[in-house]
Image (tube, rainbow over all chains, first blue to last red; front, side, top):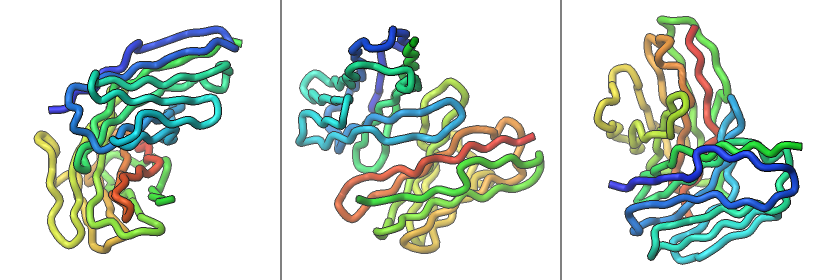
Length: 110
Length: 114
């Protein structure tokens, strides 16, 4: 059974800092890994998708990495902004079924 | 890229009524769709797997008579929460396997039962 852990559960940083969110998983036989953003009371926004054969993906200030051998993924956010404040979820997909972590709630202070 | 449209995004209903949530693949055919639920301050959990033309497969602990899933076409799956109660208030999201062997998520539905 896939288990997904996200550390830290909450993070507060001043504006402008670079930061790393962590996601670890127990079963490396994954199809893909996806990072989402969830704003309070809102839906999910897909940020980055890494296929099993890939090691990283980049979009703007975001960079996600995948290391299946160690069962880890990181989401790097550069030059954080208050608008980045949200809960960030990672999800591991095997053959269809996705397992989500509990999320990291990020607060970027102006 | 593949797009999954989920409606409504937010819904408020009275206790005892039923609510239908639609998950539609816009530019591909999805033989299989998945429904997830998120309890407050918890992670998203798989509720059921919806297969076109056949009965859905429910995860352990999910009441199939309460959460009716219909996947009548290759582009549409619906989740109906029957006789909704306040404890059914949650965030529901669907995903579908697209033609390119990827999995695409809808944006989710926030249900509030009053």
